[in-house]
Length: 249
Ligand code: MN
Image 1 (tube, rainbow, N blue to C red):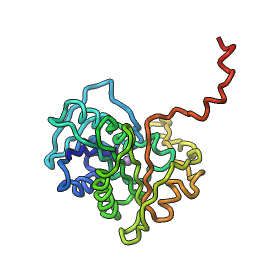
Image 2 (spheres, rainbow, N blue to C red):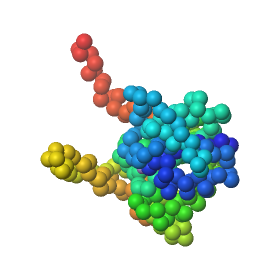
Image 3 (cartoon, rainbow, N blue to C red):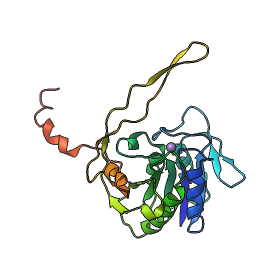
Image 4 (tube, helix red, strand yellow):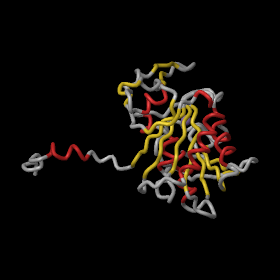
């Protein structure tokens, strides 16, 4: 088993080291990660400049690009052997509901959709690293269990881990994505030279976070696993178009 590990918090992030340590004796692991924090990069590719991989002292490969760039190179020529799956994280901070649109952690796993094994994205519901050992233990168990799981191609698992010591984790729930309310307005700032700018505000609270959602599971102390697919076609909307196309052209 060959695993490509990436993240969006950057190559020096503690969650990346914790994930690598948890998987290093289970599989042949290669780490390719952004050289800086790329949280919020989503599935973006860098097209306006070349990417320069740099192998660090610990063997991790640092790249001046996005999480998607990292996995894209890892699957397309940078490595001597194609990985079997991508494991991303462990992100410090939740990736729940609408977050999957913006998350580089989830994007890295999605970029692994062409591989044989289902790729996994791990996030700890905390900005602090205190419970990373919990998340790393659960990540290892789920990566091992993934070998017994058969899912259609182009499926990834988005996994969120509550910010709790392992003994307080109540179990694992299979969930759907909830939804967040709109984020607060960006905060206006002025730099020392008088130039105005804006900080994007934190994500909105859960608006659809009831039982069955990823939000609810982690609030109740359960690990949340949401299977994601790339196909975002709104199949149920087709009937609304009946007759509408006639007369448009
Ligand atoms: Mn992040």
